[in-house]
Length: 141
Image 1 (cartoon, helix red, strand yellow):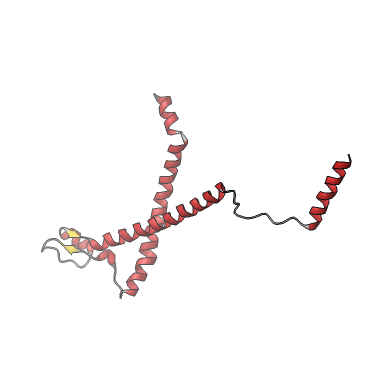
Image 2 (tube, rainbow, N blue to C red; image 1 turned 180 degrees about the vertical axis):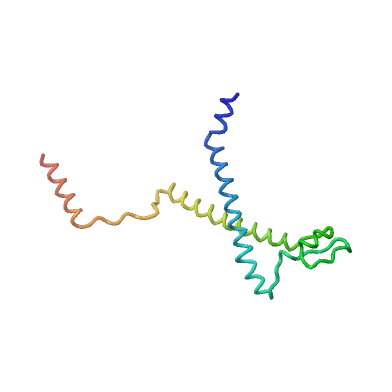
């Protein structure tokens, strides 16, 4: 049974999946930083300094705080601003992954069709002449 588990765990698909999960987690952190540190401040500046991550609706009358962290300490809150930020994260991640998959599919399609990404340059005139001389000499022999 241990040998079967080893064969399963070390099979290419499982290792590829593990690498994909690790890279995906790191990629998610990059996108979270992009949204939180670049995109949302720009959106906030356009909308007059709004910070969506701090928007919430208190679900009880005891919630009177001005920040989400303090409001959560006071009672139940509906943190819809945080949800909006996470939704923007998801949309950006999905769009970037779409672009990556699309580029990979295009490369794969070109490879299957026999189209090389960079066409080889045409041979120089001197190379063509040398090939002709070689062919003539091989015919004489």
